[in-house]
Amino acid sequence: MEAEILEALGAIVGAIAVWLMVRENTWGWPVGLLNLVAYVVVFGRARLYGAMGLQVVYIALSLYGWYEWKHGASGQPLRVSRAPRRVLAGLLTIGVASAVALATVLARFTDEAVPWIDAPLTAASLVAQALQTRKWIENWVVWMVVNTAYVGLFAARGMWPTAALYLAFLLLAILGLREWRRSMAAAPAPFRPLRVVLTGSECTGKTTLASLLSRTFGASGSVEFSRGYAERRGGLLSADDVEPIARGQIAVEDEATAAGRRLVVHDTDLVSTLVYARHYYGQCPAWIAETAERRLADLYLLCHTDVPWKDDGVRDQPLARETIHAAFVETLRALGAKVVDLEGSLAERQTMAEAAVTALLPAG
Image (cartoon, rainbow, N blue to C red; front, side, top):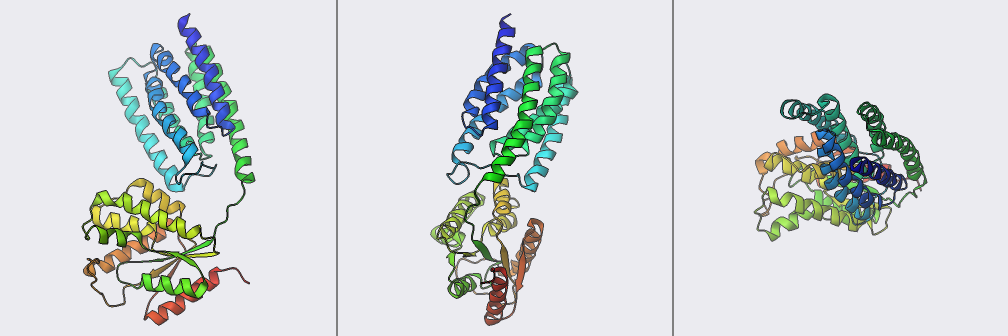
């Protein structure tokens, strides 16, 4: 009887938590924590160890989601949006691999009742929860599939309160998708200036051109954060510096955007952080790649290497410029960026750059 009461209470609290999520109410996270604690016990007694372990992971994700919904990536509450394609592909890959690994472990080392059903649903649930922590609308689609399967699983196990709960979850997921679509449609479009980035390998005139374009078009602009950062550290950088540089770069870009002008010219952006991290250290933190894609500029002016190298005490890769340039070409292509190539003398580059920016700006 005690188990049935706990299951029923967990079901009620869980339904309330999902309803709050549908309404984009941040309290859905702490209320959901109560449901998770109850179901650690419920699933353990039912020998559904995948589902039981899932609740523990949910607790950690819920704490993260609670924070993100309140503060977001830049100190502002999150808004409903769509997940980047790269994130969806990555989560799909992780979900499939996790399902196979978990099912194998459960089948070999536990008395799990239905490992090859429980494990895929566990992995898919984690994917949905991860999407929900960032208010990505695709979470509801995944939840609809998962909840449909769970209704059948729990009914077959005779866990009727939990089956009823997941039927309610299914209906709430349908409602959630509808409500979040409305939220996206109704959200006021924030002011967004056009953003132009001077990019490319070292010593190709980016800083000079950025300054010239800012003056010509009356634009606000941002400097290359990594340069000042490297100078303050005597040019000695390591993989541990990649994330501080990325955060600093985001800050200087956001400061320039906050000036409220119709055009912002950046002397490099996170794409450079991504390229150089991979070049020097062989990898880049996933959140930087994700953020670089999400913050993709309207136009990239890619400076070629057909200008003399100048040693200024900070630049250190004169022989690698072509390799790095090729990495910029490939990275920008993979991100789907709009790119205009700048070659020739400074005057020629300036003329090409001004023409590209003029074509970008709305008439009048």
